[in-house]
Length: 106
Image 1 (spheres, rainbow, N blue to C red):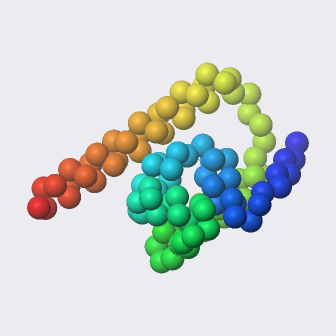
Image 2: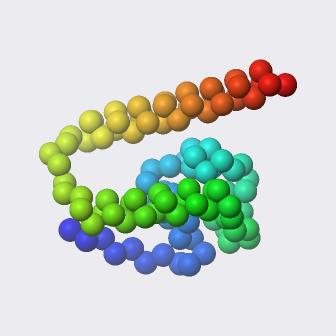
């Protein structure tokens, strides 16, 4: 089954983030930028550059390759939901560790 989604140019980054199931907080943390900057990027008022741009491009390429080869497994909705919860909790844990390290340095 192919999904063709028509997205206005201005909202492509937001649509990609939402397609992956990330909140602005999660995705901004992944990219290493602030939530406010991500919001401006999604509105088309700022652009990504440097390391965050590279991370975004790598994730987009991985997603495109995954989409080409993905076959629907027999996975229940509850398994998918629990996996999503696990990944979000893992991101929170990693964010907490990173914040703890920065507090110790000060």
